Length: 311
Image (cartoon, rainbow, N blue to C red; front, side):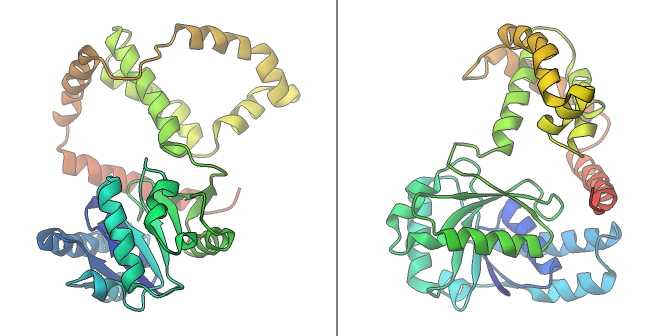
């Protein structure tokens, strides 16, 4: 697939455009908001230059990728002869229903529609389509042009061939696709992140530690391991000669006490919200949000460079 459409050109859409163009694909960008789509092109160009600064691509490849980006004036122009569309419009079922119907009106029959949705269900979104088998969730982790994860989630009517094609497509572009066997709100990564975030807020609200120290406990400890392996493999190694079975049978009992003591919120208390917002000001006294983002991107680039070799 060489002809890529970016439908919805906000923060995620612009990052997706950067990623596809950096891989040498031709990328068309459309958004109903003219200002947003023009900003997306400029942001994509800046991202490409930043990738070159970080030595993730060459200056020559960055310049070539910039020429692959094209802002179009209509959905029809975006979808003509397109092979794959990455949809990143607002998280709203009605808006997506309108978009999906227009996709079928203008896109070729073989074109595939991937949604960046982080929480909506493809089964519901694809009900408006005459050919729902070619639609799936292809959810990235932000920023998509730097983080390799993409979660592929079929709806009830998504064709197996579509899943296989998109998995192979992303593998060929250097992404790391993971496949969900069934839909759940938030997919995999955001559900895991939600569990950690809830406990982070609970610890803060209970006065156990500051925002800064709670964050440090994550990124200076388990976060370093998480860059290399997931929780199951971590605890397989943690069990020593007895492996995961020994870990569960021995140390696992301690975790039962942790879980019993943890909060089980389904909404964020106002007290936790206020403490979290106030506590993050320590970060803003050190760097502006844009400076933190630049720092993050540089560190992500270094991590990716170190992890490129196979385990």
